[in-house]
Length: 438
Image (cartoon, rainbow, N blue to C red; front, top):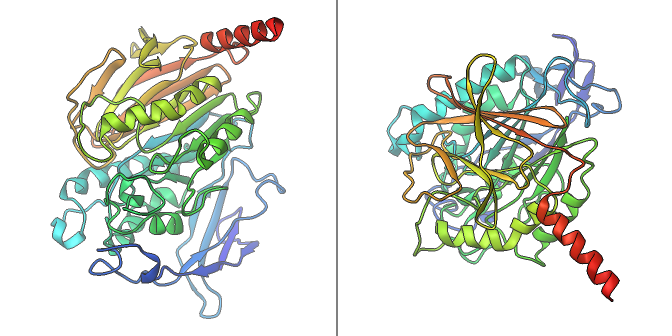
């Protein structure tokens, strides 16, 4: 049972939880269903209803959960509700945290935690750096784009991970996409990118961290409106080719966006269309996946004027140009704000801006290829990004070093929501010409 209210220790609302379990037989391979198996017990899911009907936006909710029969309850926690769609919080812009590739933070040896040692301190630092923002009510959602716990089929790792993220994930919306370490497995619903889920096949991530509609186990894509931002989570581990279910859903979603209410669109999948890498020669390598995603969805992202696409998988942070078909549409120019801080400035770029934010905990990866669209790169630096939508025309992004809390990089994107991007204008004129000619 979930008890919640608008004042501390005054719980006027009750939500009854549903209960589910994860069975060993639901997993698709080893180690998840063999030596890595761990019974996670009963999984209780409760919904906070009435946010919209009771206009409970931009407020702090106090809650606790437990068993009414035994009167055994958790400590009181707080949750900050997001702004109403199309509106801003009263004293700040719509604000999101963007990150990927976190993992479990631990100082223990990796053999004791079944996670990689290099995720220990960085993952804890990232969680501890984000949490104060959340607890102060400054974050409307955290968007974690894949490679979540790195359990890799050792299910007990999920217990450590969920405990680690609870101070931040329990205080604001925590939205995820799946990565290869959650889903990839041969002869499954995923593409043939290997077996790095360790036999989990998406069961753990989609059960423990359920996402908005229409996400499901084998079709884990979704979208959600927060304030004046429309965010989209796709799966780069599943078929997204033209005529696939995911492609059809993505196009329908993007063309249905009300840019008056949500003028900004941010899309994320675990892997990127552009990355500073030349790795090839193995399933799911960077070059092949880049080319596949460009062939499948780049025109779609351009057609519907997506402002920002971010990804992880490659364990560094890369800020790239506004790009279309491997060509720089607009490079940023550097300006200085009132505090004399340097900002990479995009003035109404006629293409999506791409970036990698893949070092929340795992890494580092070192780029081995720099392209014309590569603007800046941070290796062996762990952190996350904060993006703020001030109004329909001004989006501010900054990259935070989670060890020092220092802001290392800043970027601004402006837009005119009434303008049509240049290649889209060409397409319109071509259509008109064909119509007249026919």
